[in-house]
Length: 294
Image (tube, rainbow, N blue to C red):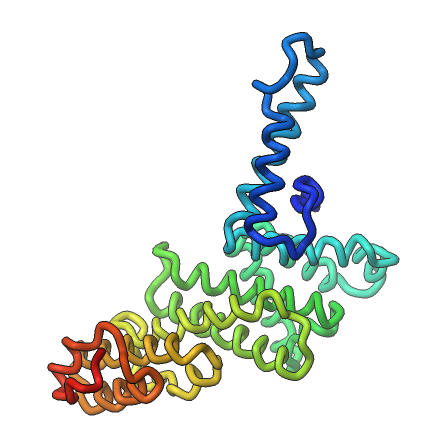
């Protein structure tokens, strides 16, 4: 896959700050902007300048956006590992099993955000192993780092499809969100035992936070599979952030008239953040002392 190296284009390091990226962009944009060329420039020079200007703009558009930069870093990291390996995927595994080739196609589909195709291929591989009475394991095919990257992309695909407003039934959407949650949690567990995910671990926690809150919504709530609050504390988020999540859960419990549960969770929020912002209304409803409110 041809993925341009935006860091090289801007002439900055992987650890460049937002201000350094902006400074590099402005410097190069001035150099290559077509309006800055001499009037006597050759057509080839003009074409090269326009091409470079487009590349510089594309690089800046991605690297200045935290979400797009995170996605790009993950894809670039994977491509570089594949490029630096002594043999290509197909050279290593072409004589072993078609499953290897399918997995590579699966990975490429997810990298290109073809979520439905990728998930369909993933579930076919899982189903094939289940019929043979064994669990399919991605580590049988990739090295440890690539396996975790692939799992991240699979979880991302499940999450995107689960939260999409498509033609899928609510049951099917819920199943996909549950699967995404399971894989993200597995990644967190693996990271605790053998760190390799570093740059993306905060993103995994943010995605789990969204999924957990989904389970405390009208659409996602199921009494039979209620998310334990211990999962939220296990994310080890800042106290202020965890308190905010507890407050949102308490507000949901009030909405469905589970007042004892709402009171319990809200008091947990106050234990973490005594001056909890935006809690006056719910405190009045639950008859919680005003002195706990900021």
